[in-house]
Length: 308
Image (cartoon, rainbow, N blue to C red):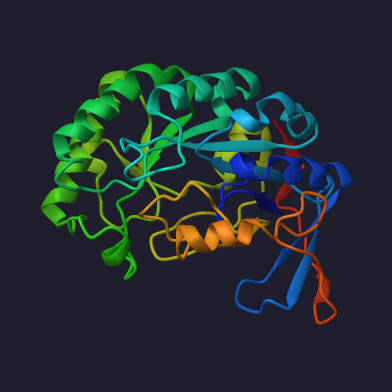
């Protein structure tokens, strides 16, 4: 099975001590977001976890202790660095600082295990096509030698975004095509592999492939292992990822990104953060008398016959 540490919240940036302790103790509890009294226990052991996939906008808090995990597990890292400032991503370090930290991460774990995420791609009167062109090229020129690939997707117009970010422009097909062409041309210039994930539309004419951001081929090649030939069901329409189990929780990320789908509001995340106990097996709070804990199914995707 694949463990995902960052799909619901930026665990690396805000819950590093908890995350490291969970791997030290060898298990974690995950509360079902739809049925809160249902809790699943996952064993955090290399025997049953094929790969630990990280996703964060700031790896600085965990870099010094990361070998505690990378020395034992297959890993893959998504590092999100966008064109936006604190007006859109209040809790995220500057582009300059993020680029420095990504380079440190890459030097520590190897470029084959690091994907740069440039998403979501959105347009406003401030963040125009020209801003994306300039910023993406600046970053691509520095980051290409340190990453396996770059992954982007277009912003999805969730209903709450009309309230949280009213200045967002609804992307037309012409907008998407212009953005894809721009990113594709820059990626080709620097030899950067560029792909979409969770985005409908064919942009292969711009040298952009459609794939998952978490595929067995990608993870296997990065870690020198071979997986079974399994169907990638994805998490939503347009997603080509292999299934994974997320150990985080919604409404807990303090980055405050205005386009975020995982938080109802920054205030809700701040309120929930007060329930966090680094010593608890749960990201938020503790087990209650009404909770029902079940052991999660942990089936290996690794091929038993082949090792690279």
